[in-house]
Length: 444
Image 1 (cartoon, one colour):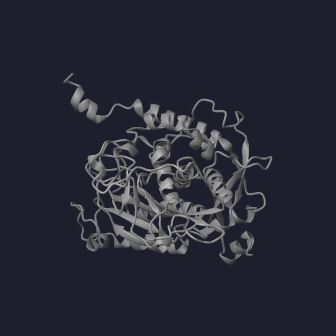
Image 2 (cartoon, helix red, strand yellow):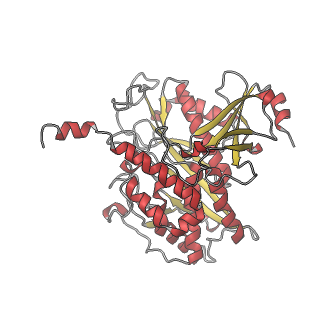
Image 3 (cartoon, rainbow, N blue to C red):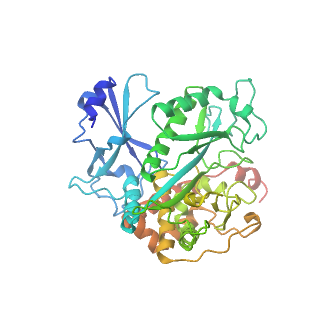
C-alpha cells in the first residue's frame, strides 16, 4: 500500500492541508509543510473547535467539552488524501479523525457521529447505501452584507433574469466555471454523475453516484470547497445557503438511502413481488416520526427555515409517496433491487456527515421499532398542514426530547450541538432587520 510519504514524493507535495470537518461542516485544521507531516502522529489541535458557532462565538460551559480545552490528536484518513487542484503549488488535502490523547475517539466530532450510526447498522448485519444530490447558487461577488445577492454575468454578458429549469443553454452561460468544477472534481476523484440547471436563477445541482455513506460524506464535504474555489477563479461566489434569494427556490441536499443485507448482498427493502416490503415501510415511518427531532441537523441555520415554505420546491411536512416530489419522503420509481427512499427535507447548508447520520438513524429506529407509516400521498402535500418545525428554536426542543435520536447520535454530541445552535439563534435574534425598520419604524 502506498504510504503518505511515498505519495508526497510521487506528487512533489510541498504542503499539507490537515482538514477536520467541524459542526457546521466547514474545514478546520492546519497547514503543515510536507516534510514535517507525520502520518503516525497527525496533528494536535484544540478540542474546542467543535464548540464554535458560525459567528465565531462559544456557548457557556458545556460538559461535552473538556473545560481545559485540551488538545486532541487528529489522525489522517488515508483514503481521503487528494491533491488540491486549485492550489498555486503542489498541495495535499487529508481529512482527519479526532481522538483524545488517551486514544478514545472524540465522540462530538461529526465524522465519529456518522461512524456511531454506521456501527448500529453493522450490529444488524446491514450496510446502508446513500446518494446525495446537492444544489447551490452562483452569484455576483457581494462584499456588502446589506445588499441582496445578484446572479452573475454569463458568457453572453448578461445576467439571467428568469427561471430556466433544466435548460442546457442556461447552463452553458456558466460553461467556464462548470468545466472548472468538473475538472477539479475529476482530479479529486469525486464520483459525481450529472450537473443540471435547477429551478432558481443561476441555481445548479449535482448528483453523486450511490455508495458508502462515509465516503459520500467526505466527497460532499470536499465538493463544497471545490465549487467555492472554482467560482472564485471565475470572479463569482458559489453559495450553499438554504435560501439566498427572496422569491427564488431554496437549495437542498436530497438524500437517497437504501440498505443492503451484508450476508446476502440484497436490498432489504425489496419485497418478493417487486413492491416495497413491510420493513421498508417501517423505515419510512421512522423517518416520519423522527424528522422533527432531526430538523436542527437538516435545517441547521436560521436561514434554513425560509426554504421550507408552502408551494415551493421544498417540503413542509412528513408525508411520503411514490414518485411524488411534493412530499418530504419520496420513493422513486425503480427496479426492486434499487428500492430506496429520498429524504427531501435537508438543505444544502447542512453538514453532510450529520445529515447522513441523522437520516440513517431515523430510518433505522423505525425499522427496529416496526413502526407503521401513514398512507402514501398521491396528491400535493403542500395542500396539507405544515407539520415540520418552522424555526430553529422550535426544532431544538424536539431534538432535546427525543431519546432515540439522542442515543443514536450520542448524548455528548446532542448536548453540544443544542448549545451551539441555541447561541446562534440568540445571536441572530438580536439583529434588527430592514423589514422591521421599513414596516414598524413609523407605523406602530
